[in-house]
Image 1 (cartoon, helix red, strand yellow):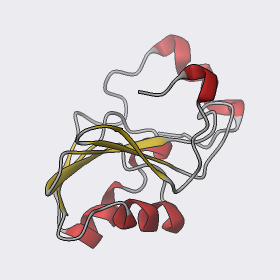
Image 2 (image 1 turned 90 degrees about the vertical axis):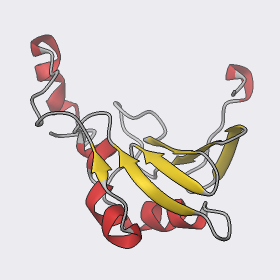
Image 3 (image 1 turned 180 degrees about the horizontal axis):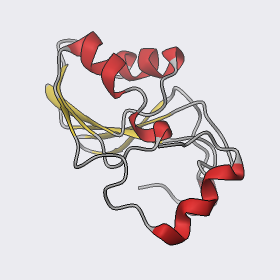
Image 4 (image 1 turned 180 degrees about the vertical axis):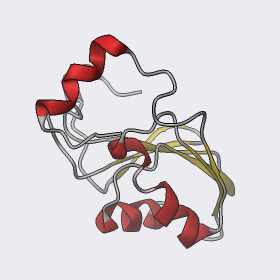
Amino acid sequence: MDDPATFDPMPGRVDRLAPGLRRVLAPNPSPMTFRGTNSYILGEGEVAVVDPGPALRPHLDALLAALAPGERVTRILVTHSHLDHSGLARPLAEATGAPVFAFGDSSAGRRADLAGLAGLGGGEGV
């Protein structure tokens, strides 16, 4: 994993964190996303994409380019419905044919004490 002293992710770059685990940073820095949303590619060959990120064409292109020759996305996993994590789910599903898996609607698991953070300007939304 990353050494905090040298943590310097770059949008669009594929970082191999461990065997079978890649990270691609989205180009959406904000107070809530820090340098951007992290999207993860799990596995090799038939892979899962976890939190595909915001609906930004450059990020879709970066995720697809992160696949090795012959690899294919077989599932898309969304941990929560903030737009910085889920916005690209449908475009990625359309590009790859992979199904999207998520839990509940946009209010599922939402904490009332964090509702006020929506106005901080990160574009996360629900």
